[in-house]
Image (cartoon, rainbow, N blue to C red; front, top):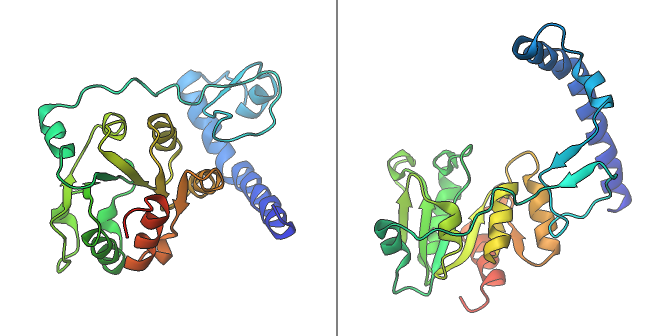
Length: 237
């Protein structure tokens, strides 16, 4: 990081500690004592006595210094891909050049994106020779949008099993940690549209490794999506 980024990092850390100490600590201790008894020591004192920490990280995706009692278990949730049901197998079987899989996880709904951002994404996909599987409920999109025929929507999809299918060429996501680990396991490049928390860091790290391209939410347009897809899948246009 350059000097500006380091200063920004220090300020962010101090802000996090401040809000945790003055706005989060009391509530967390109250909740812990409610479940484990009033005699439970404070979480702060328990942290000082921690002998072992298991973290959801893997050095292949994010290298950082640790001490001996920190063990990385990143990818623990990853499993061998299961055969798709007949229905989902029919979705990934396509005459197009392949599948673009788009999911913003379980907490963010693309239906809440602004109409201009959505239309920019729709217009970009309309010009691509790929079928797009998009996790969303189309009835909840704003009215008046023009949705191309090569986009198929599903409320839920077996993400891990679809990502590892040979038809899938690209994963567009919010940059969540678990989905990123699944994509790496399946060997699928990503376009990341980070929205909050660790997502921006995850995508920037993947971009440095050459396995992802970041598109900021505020920059979403037909041109930026096409450019990002072109960088990942160089034979598109």
